[in-house]
Length: 192
Image (cartoon, rainbow, N blue to C red; front, top):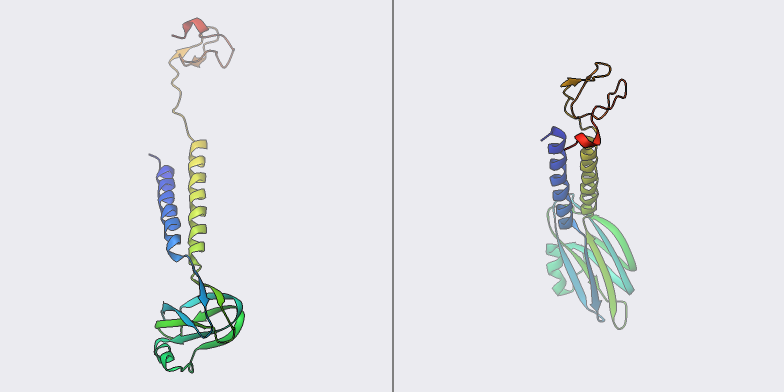
């Protein structure tokens, strides 16, 4: 097996691994329904300095908080102070960077809208897309390496095992014509 075929096989295996791994980084999507005064949350376990893309789209106005675990535990007492981020909106897109390692909560409250409210919540790392693109590109590259190997396939050297009876040029027994004088070396009747 040639080096290029081994390289191509290795590239295919790595590309498949990247494509499979990309599925573990997919963003999360939820649609939450709230009655008046209802509060719901999503927990994120983040390392210090790690960023999370968050997009919220509501059917009406809602209030959105980001808070650490200790502030989240004090919500039961009605205390929303000390949140890291607060906004009242119907459409929100932001990138939150964790100031320290730990659990952070995305808290959504329906305190502004009478009746029911639905909020679509998208969050998560989009690194999966980069892994997927890298895996596909590597797979295409492996195909190109294989095609290059096929196109540059070198045949074994021809053995000149006889001579042309007409001009004396060295020829192979498998040839039909002499390349020098075009003398017929082998007729269709000789092929058996």
